[in-house]
Figure: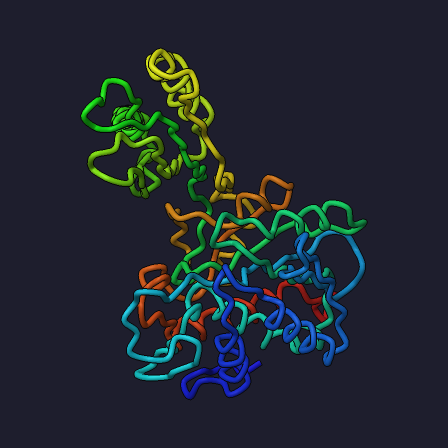
Length: 393
C-alpha cells in the first residue's frame, strides 16, 4: 500500500473510480459492484461469500483473510448510495472527478472512499503475518434503514469463528465515534370517510385527524427535550413529521391521509413508550370519534425502518486502539445512524471511523479529500501492524 497520497495513489484512485462508476442508488441492484469486489478478491486468492436478498437482486459480501481463529477485526461498509435526483451536480455523479485535492462522485464520502481504502489495503494485509483474522463485510440498503446487513449479521452469528471488534467506515473525518442515536421510522395511515364538502359533518376528514396526530407528535417532541445527554448534538431525542399527503379536491372531504414520522433517540432512551403514547392517542382518543361517524374509519401504523443506537465505552480497549490507529484521540458521537448499533447488539464491539464528512454526504458534488483518504490508509496500516505477529515474538 502506498504510504503517501500527495500525488494520489494510482491503485487507490483506480479502485475508487471503479466503485463510483457503479450506480448503486438503493432503489437499484448492487450486484454489479458486489461481483466486481468478489472478482477483485478472487484474483488475490480470497474467497468471498455472497448473501442475497429474497429476490436475488442485491447481495452482501463477507470475506476473511488471515488465520482461522476466534476474534479478529471486521471492517464494515455499505455499498448503496442516496439518489442524485433533483440535485444540481457540476460534475458527473457516477464518475470520479479529481480537483483541488478532492475526489468528487456520489458515494465518495458515504462511503465508497472507505471501501476503496480497504480494498487497496488487502494485498498488504495478505503479506503480513496476521495473528488474527481480518473480515470484510460490505452490505446493501443501509441508506433505507440498515436492511441488508441484518442477514449478514445472521450469517456471522451462525459461523464457527466470529470477529471480536468492528470498525464501520462511515464518514467521520477520521474521528473515532463511539456513539450514535437509534432510529425508528413509521408511516401513519388515516382512513376517513369521504363526502361532499357541503355536508362535511357527514364525513370523517382524514387530513384533520392526521393534523391532530401531528400536533400530538409536536407535544411529544417537546417532552423529549427534558431528557438530555450532552455528549450528543442535539442533546436530546427528536421526533418529527417528514412527509404528509392526502386529499383529492377541495370540495371533497378527504378519506385518506398518510404521513411519515421519524424518531431518533438517545442510547439510554426506550423508543417503545414514546411511540406507544402516539398509538394510544390514536386508538383511544381519535378512533372512537371517527368511528362514531363511520364505523370503517381507522388509523394504522406501518413500520418503515429501525436500527438500534450505538454506545461503546470510550475508555474501552477498542476505542483507545482506534484512537491510536487513526491518530485522533478526540473521540466523539454523531446523530446520524450507522450499522454499528446492529453489530454491537450482535456482540461485536464497534467503533465508527472513516474518511470524509457527512457535511458532504448526500449533497450535490459530494467529495472526499485526498488528505482524508491518506489518513484512512494510515489507520489501516497501523491496524495491520497491530494485527501482525512481531518478529521478536
